[in-house]
Length: 169
Image (tube, rainbow, N blue to C red; front, side):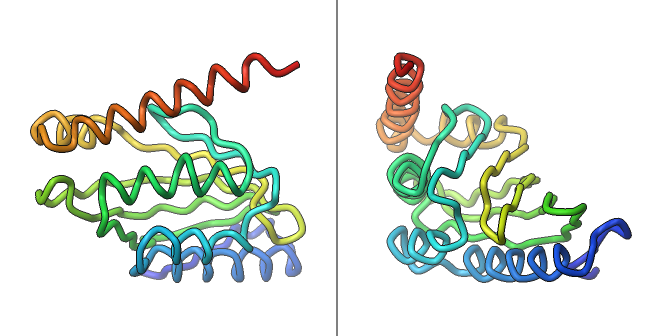
């Protein structure tokens, strides 16, 4: 199976930006060397005001939000998380990337499938919306009491962030 698929409507400049971005995405998820290295790798691929949307969590905004509200909590729950891109497609500056994420949650193996829709502007991601069934992740958390506290902290920090952003004019 080919790792790259491009829609026929993608223009050559947009395609090369898409190819470059997806290559970086593949490299970043392949075998991250911890949260700091993961964040450093993706930092330059994201617009300063990037929006990250995902199931079960509040929307995250900005590079700092990416690091503090997405990367650190993810690696706290699943320290050995890694991803394999199965296929991707581009239409203009919009990418669709299917990947399988793997890691250990409380010492138990966990695998789940994800599809990310990434919108690029000038070669940087301005928005990423992730689509996945959170059921397997929630079930794995429920079966592993030692991860309940980190998972609840993650959910509460998302709630606090959501409440803060709602209050801003």
